Image 1 (cartoon, helix red, strand yellow):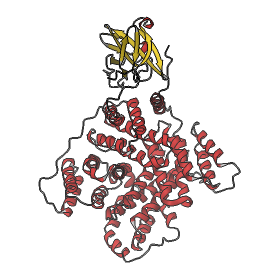
Image 2 (image 1 turned 120 degrees about the vertical axis):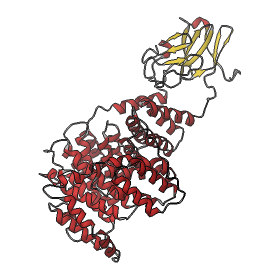
Image 3 (image 1 turned 60 degrees about the vertical axis):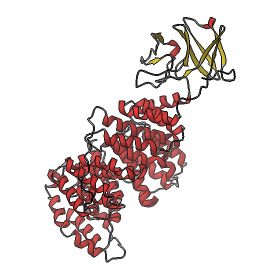
Image 4 (image 1 turned 90 degrees about the vertical axis):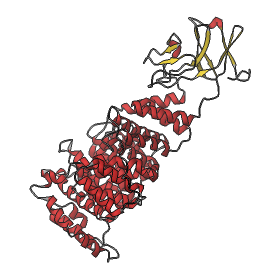
Length: 580
C-alpha cells in the first residue's frame, strides 16, 4: 500500500461523514467513503454492474449492497459475491487526525488483459451479456488482438455443448470474418455478438465428453477416411470422433482433414437443410483465425451434427414429383470418370447460358450442365462460385408475396452455397463436387419462391450523393416492409460509384445494432464473402440480396445494443445515474 503524500490526497474530514458515509470527487473520480465497524473504507462510487451510486447503498456486517440489482461487495476490498457484477475498485484510505486521505490511483492487482480474460470466462460460464460486453471492450482497450478472445470463446463452445457445433459457434466464425469490413467500434460489437450467442447455446446444456483417439500409433490415412465415413453412415458419433481425433493426431494435412469431413457430409444429400455444410465451413474459417493447431479441440465438435443430421433424400421434396436424389446418385456414378476427363483440359470456358440453366426449371438440364462443365475442366471452385451467385439471385428475386418464413428457405440455399465456395478453396476431392450438385438442386427447388420474381434493380443514373443514399438505406431498417427499396438503394449506391467498402461498413453496422437472428447474421456475412469473390460487377447481386434480407428482418427491439451501450459508457467512466 502506498503511504507517501505524493500518492494520497486529502478528500474529506470526519465531520463530513453523514450517516457514516460521504461522497467525494478527486481528479474527476467519484469515490464513496464509509465508516464501518470503526474503520474507514473507500470504493468507486459507481456500481460496476450498471453504474448505480454505491453511496446510496447499505452496509451491514462488512457487506456493501447496491440497492438497484442487489449486487453485494466485501467492503474492505471490493470483491463481489455475485458473478453478474465485477469487483468494485477499492482505494487505500488513511485517517490523519480528523482528515481523510485516499490514494485514488493504487497499483492494479493484475494486468487489465488478465482481468478481462477472467471475466470473459465468467461471462461465458454464467451466460452474462453485460459481463461479456465489458470483457470484449476491456480486452480491446488493453490491446489484445481479436484472435485471443475468439479462441477462448470457441474453445468454450466446443467443450460445453453436448450437441457439438451449433448456431452460436457458426455466428462466432461469421463475426470473425466480418471484422476487417467493420468500423473499430463495430468490431467490438461483432465479437460481443459471437460471444453472446455461444454462451446462449451452452447455457443449461450438458458438456461434450471428449472421446480419446484410437490407441494405435500408426494408422493408414485412407483407412481412417473410410472408417470415418462408415461411422457417420451408421450414426456412430463416438466412433467417428475417435477416428477423427486419430487422423488429427496423425498430422494429416489440413486439405485431407477437410476432404475427410466433406466426403462424409456429402454421402447423403443436403444435410440438415444446409446447416451441416455451413457449420463445417465455419469451423475451418474459425481455425484460420485462432490457428489450425487447435483442430483437435474444435473439429470434433462437428461430429454430433454430422452423425445426427437429417438427410434430404428422406424428404418428400427431394423424391416427388421428381426423384432428385436418384438423379444425383446416377450422375455420381460417373463423377470420377468426368473428373479424369476434365483434368486433361487446361481451362474451362462456360457455355453460353450456363448460369441461366442453373436457374432453370429443368433438373435434368441442370445436372447435365454440371456434368459437361466438369468434363470440360471446370474446377469445384469455379462451379461453386456460379451456384452461389444463382442462390444470391433467388434471394434478390424473392417475392414478398410468399410466407415470411420462406425467406429462410432461399437463405439456407445461399449460405450452403457460400460454404461450398469456401470449402472448394481448401479441397478438390469428389465430396466438394457432390456438394456443388446438391447446392444446384436446391437452387432449383427454390424456383417457386421467385414467383413472381422481384425485379433486380437495373443500373441507372442517380443524382443523389452516395452518402445520402446510405442515410436512406439506414432508414429502411427502421421501418417494416422496406425490402425492395433497400435493394434499390444498394444498387443505386454502387451504380453511382459509391465505395463498396463504405457500403459494407454501413450494412455491417446496421446489422450489429439489431437483435439479428442466426440467419440474418449468416446472410450478411455470406454476402460480403460473395461480393469479394465475384468483384464489383457481378458481385453487386450479393449486396442487393442481403440488403433485401436485412430489411425484411428489421427493425428489432435492439436489446443487445442497449446492453453494449451501457457497457461502453461504464468502461469510459461515464455517470449513468446521478450520484446524489
